[in-house]
Image 1 (tube, rainbow, N blue to C red):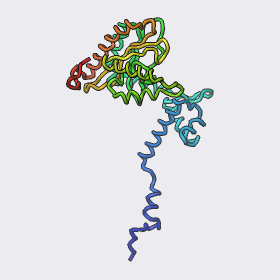
Image 2 (cartoon, rainbow, N blue to C red; image 1 turned 180 degrees about the horizontal axis):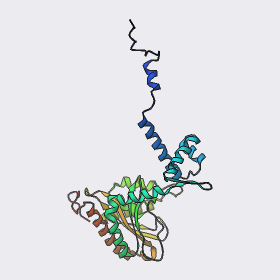
Image 3 (cartoon, helix red, strand yellow; image 1 turned 90 degrees about the vertical axis):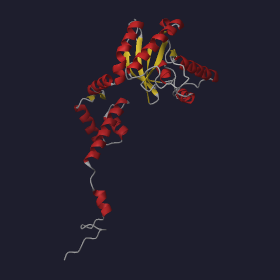
Image 4 (cartoon, rainbow, N blue to C red; image 1 turned 135 degrees about the vertical axis):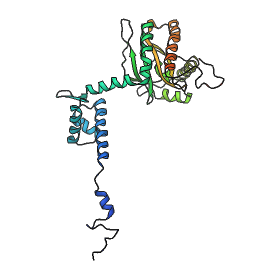
Length: 287
């Protein structure tokens, strides 16, 4: 009679733990790892790694593995390769980016209003959201004047110095405001106590009025007026701004534009389900 195999040892003499170690990874796990590595390639190229050695170093993979991943992405048009310039992001990403922008409920709800505001003011109108602590620009309608505001959809800018950024955080606590001010970036001198106090005073005023200004803080000679956009719950989910050069943005005009920008923000908010009484605490004055 054949003896029963011990539960502690398999017939080939390998213990259950060793057998478990030798079990190959599930195909789904391998596929997920390959996908993540492919995304890492895209992000590495976007951050400036344009040749194979730089990509391999950034990813921590062998050149053979890196070349295989990059070649697959080239075949699918997610990246380009030219002998002299190396790797760059490809047209497929551009196609998907435009489609993603069109498919965003916010963009769909906002774009017509942005166009009307741009036609009315003749100035550049932009739409932004807060993403990982910075302003992310998701739509832009150029102005009709003889100069162009140098910004693009996909740009990322600090909160503390931009009209959009300030408008996006008007509902936040002063402690959160301070965190954005303290993250101004390397190379900038610290604000003096008086400048810091003045910035907080401005933010309190903006929060009361429901509008925020960029008074050449982000770029010399560039000013803007921005207002927050709210969803059905009353939470700020985006902001809209009108930007122009300082000669077109004298104090009287900025005050007049404040009404137009707020009305546009309210119209977009209404399209997202907001109403004037949505999620407003008792005793709060509706702006």
